[in-house]
Length: 148
Image 1 (cartoon, rainbow, N blue to C red):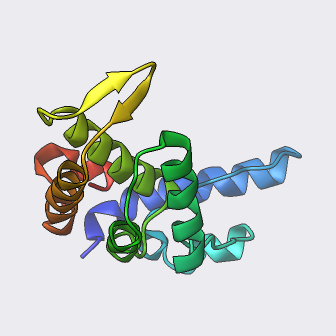
Image 2 (image 1 turned 30 degrees about the vertical axis):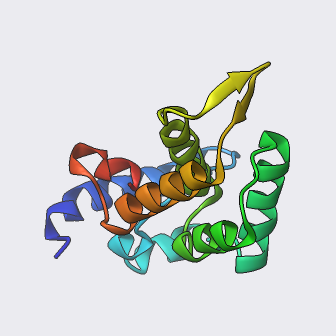
Image 3 (image 1 turned 180 degrees about the vertical axis):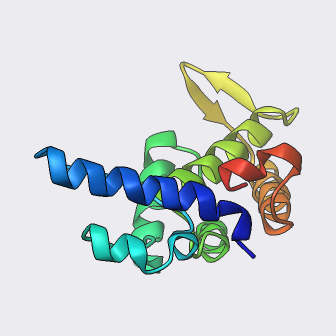
């Protein structure tokens, strides 16, 4: 499956070995697909896993966003976003949040007053549903390289 990566991975492993032998530095490497590197990476450097935010962490993150925006999102709307963002990073959750706000700004009844959005509940509901439906359909065209 990842055979195309093997020469690049071998070169990378050689570089890691060279760095370890000749320098005293810290190398920080972020991987989205650590399985592609196989066991050889773990023999060379210590690896740490960072988990996605839990359901409660996602809910608190979104509640802070709602509080800062002063837009009256309902508890059920927040819960829908929390469910939709399982196994998502904070960056991905923020993108969904921003997409919801951009969708809301396009609604006819939404107004901007002193840098605050003023929206009716029906438009909030519509924006949440539209964005969550798009997100649940998976990656869009060439945005897939960014995880959405």
